[in-house]
Length: 254
Length: 308
Ligand SMILES: Cc1cc2nc3c(=O)[nH]c(=O)nc-3n(C[C@H](O)[C@H](O)[C@H](O)COP(=O)(O)OP(=O)(O)OC[C@H]3O[C@@H](n4cnc5c(N)ncnc54)[C@H](O)[C@@H]3O)c2cc1C
Ligand SMILES: Nc1ncnc2c1ncn2[C@@H]1O[C@H](COP(=O)(O)O)[C@@H](O)[C@H]1O
Image (cartoon, rainbow over all chains, first blue to last red; front, side, top):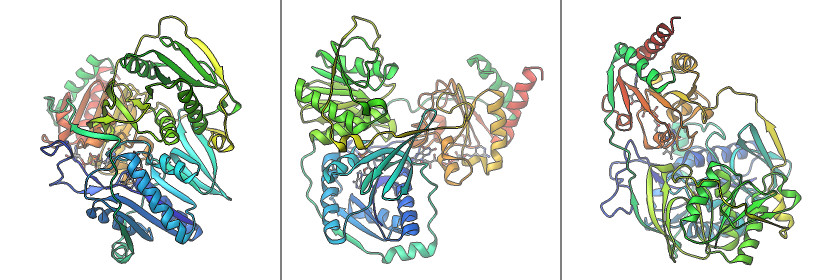
């Protein structure tokens, strides 16, 4: 079994969004970085599939050279090797991202055979474009299901489950296939210290694709209004209980 | 002309129609399998095929592509639901045009100027959308809904030409869930706890208060990652979006990704030991204190007020 997971490096923002002066990006000088929880579940699932069926798991990112950190993190969770499409840090729009990923997949597959399954996050944490995985699937001519909280192998097929009001909707796709997954698919493991050390020695192949013109072209980022309310302090400690109940009664829920 | 893809009639469809109307062109609608009860469009084009008996995103996208080729609209709009975004992304891939998901505003033109949400609503992006037609979805609950009144639209059925591949991705089975009580998304009251709960047992007092208020229990991602509660309880960008009358957040710091899930709450009460926790900047009310003391005191006071 060969499984690929695509992940995107994003800043780990805290309680407030702060932008750079030119409003083109989040100010990251004091922030750490991570990937979307959706993608983390994709990584965990890929590792489990290879643990169960044998084969190879590969993690891929398109991002700045610092994004190697996210590739190492994924390899610490058990991914076997990585492909890094190195950018100069400028964000790529979803069409350009998909097309670079397709080129990389084709190149890897021509040497190593097809990926049985390619995992994407349902949407990226920062962009929320809901499309890169679907575009890649069409370019490769493979079926794609998204919004998934269940992915299991059934013979040559993959059973895909979505949570919907009242239950779960099931799709059955032949492999090779592409899936877009959500957090809740599984509970990702924490990496052990030896696994982190091993990850440092796993191979990362890098390439430097060139960035096409953006067709969904970012002009600027804007922090929405709504932060900076002045909360009414109802009190300190358990003595505040009567004031809380009064508020609940006013709202009409008590 | 603008085509609006209608997944189902209702509030979100009316929001998408209002948004599309602002683009200043005649509206047509596309639906799959049957005509939804919407007004304010000239014609509802109904794609007919057995495959539309259940959700089939690739087939709906193919129907949309046929309609786009026939009617040459300037834009295609849908509600930014999970399935609205899915169908438009499939159509964008087929047409090889850009697609802007979850917009809150758009100004007609080429390129079209759009404002869209990022980070689940914690950040906005002004962008230029190129290509033709313009494909975009509308962020739920960000724009007013159009009233569902006016002349009954014409209905025109058509049978799209579907390949085996188009029919492949479809819901083949619906597994019913056991009735899990009050759903987080619809609850009038949500009582949540974060890392401050300290342990899975720390949720006993949270469940008690939620029970007294007829509400649902929520949590932060710190809690689900620790395995204290299932992911179905998680509020936030990658969890459930809630819209209760009041959200009571105990021992939750207020990370932007958590707040992205509770923007719809009409009131927010934070219970936190830290008077400087970021959540206070979004809260209407706050109690500064240990949730293990404050929450049981509130439950006791509620019982007292009810004469129990
Ligand atoms: C892409 C992405 C998506 C994410 N999606 C989500 C999401 O959907 N939902 C989500 O919740 N998070 C999400 N996160 C994680 C988020 O960034 C935070 O890490 C998380 O919300 C923190 O949870 P917390 O507030 O419980 O913990 P902490 O940040 O550790 O805060 C604990 C709070 O409890 C208070 N406290 C401690 N003890 C007590 C006590 N005894 N009584 C009262 N107060 C006390 C502390 O003062 C502090 O404010 C996401 C992160 C990323 C990067
Ligand atoms: N720069 C990137 N590098 C690798 N994968 C990406 C990148 N951008 C998006 N993806 C993948 O595509 C998914 C959907 O992204 P989006 O269409 O931007 O919402 C993400 O969850 C990732 O799995």
